[in-house]
Length: 340
Ligand code: NDP
Image (cartoon, rainbow, N blue to C red; front, top):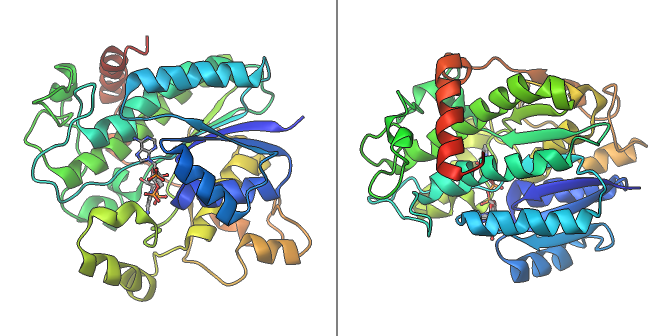
């Protein structure tokens, strides 16, 4: 039997690249949770997804009802089999908006799509995972959720949930931000990533022992070529990838980022829970899936054949680890999403 993997946002970028890697490994069946089934169909055809091992399923993360309907469909689809992996990957990035955009549920869009809906989704899917012998939940964080680093701490605006006053009040129109302060699109995005990383820790603390599920977050590297930056100005889109590639060395291609996330889903050492996974160094030749296959193995478990040894357990910032704030985030997010 194939392992069942649920990934949000498989119609683009990192989600698409990771799905390609999983489908090559042959032992997985991927359920792609996407907002646009037609787009997914086209992408799957162009990318040559093996449709025997890929099932697209509709979800609009900007709508809690849609998230609930998705989990009901998923439950029917699995027919009693456990879900083995859940990846909270989909996101939107709206750094230049002057005013917030709102969802049907009355939340700021980045907040609900990136964070609140993934929280709800995880709470609904976790009970379907407990029978798996190797269950993993992975949150896609960001360097911006870790202020120990230049990208996270040094670049304005800085992710900061403060005392979570906005979320405590429900974070509904006109309250956009979790900290309750004025709207700032770029900060909102970073706040959602920080909240996801805190959620991973809180799930680890609360549920790892009792369920055996491994909870982790990752920073895949800056994938400057994905459409995530579609809302940035054209000059930025044109030069940012070049800047990242040649000046900062922090750039990774979509395929390599997908290989990294694949490693966290596949590598036996990534059954460890409560970890924020990162990778050392920039991209190197021969790290893609093709190179690994040429080397005779798809998986570098043990490190052979493709740079998998560059993975490491990264430090987490004081903000991510702040237990009081994590507790408050847990209570308020349950309230706002109706998860519990
Ligand atoms: P993309 O924009 O390529 O992919 C985002 C995906 O999210 C798309 O498939 C998109 O669907 C989906 N999505 C957006 N809104 C919704 C919604 N309402 N309901 C369901 N799905 C939705 O970006 P990336 O691949 O770069 O981003 C993937 C993850 O990686 C994100 O979590 C991002 O924060 C993170 N990340 C990205 C970095 C980068 O440098 N790019 C760096 C660090 C982290 P559709 O295909 O229909 O548009």
